Amino acid sequence: MADAATAEIPADEAEEMTVVRTKDVTKVYRMGKVEVHALKGITLDIRLGEYISIMGPSGSGKTTLFNMIGALDKPTEGQVYIDEVDVAQLDAYELAWLRCRKIGYIFQTFNLIPVMSALENVTLPMTFAGLTTDEARDKGMDLLDQVGLAERYDHKPYELSGGQQQRVAIARAMANSPAIILADEPTGNLDLATGKEIIQLLGEMNRNGNVTIITATHDIKMLSASDRIVWVRDGRLAKIELREDLDIQIGSIEGDAEGGIEASLRGAGDAGESDKSDEDEGE
Image: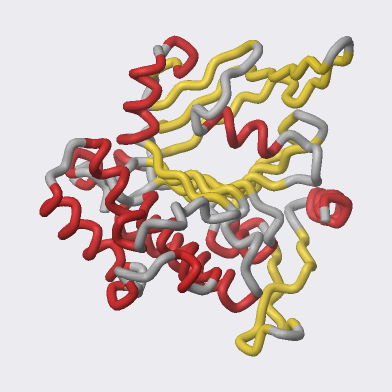
């Protein structure tokens, strides 16, 4: 589902391509005479086709970092590059183009337009991108089919369950074949079983379309789909771990008949225990 140029890149070359790069990013919020240092010099490279989970306790800076990567906010100092373009140097029109064409957004609260049907919500970004009505409808129906909701295309958000609304939001995020999907707590308002389905769906899009998935999450289940986990603490990168270096124990969780991931992680060396305690604090 990525664009043609991305789809034609050989897998070995794609692994070496950096699609997002932050360099010494800081963010200071000023509230009257008080300064809040949300980010304190974060440098991070994210490769094309990676599945990244940004994790950390509440107030750690992970959402601020997420907003920087998604060009939703600008750093106080440092640079954020998307496809080696410094986002801070873009004007309003260029930023709008970037957000429309390069990045798809998925939010915890779905952010669907309540008076529009599922299909209309999915095709709205295509209209902004210049597709004709027929082109948008055909592509929108294809995307709804991919997320398992083709038969609900004419339903309004209030006629859909939370999981179905999030599936519509995922289809909408893919509307213009973005290279990057940014998902902010995509399972935060869902039950365990439905959250697991959404994680699997994002994983399929990542594998089948070579789309870079970047999530900010508290959901331990997300780790099983991630290539790398970026742990943020006190506005800094605490560490970055590979999925294979984590010991994620699968077990039964009450309310999840198919089983879930226990809140028990052991990373390489002494890292796992400290970050697990951080996660508990964030909850």
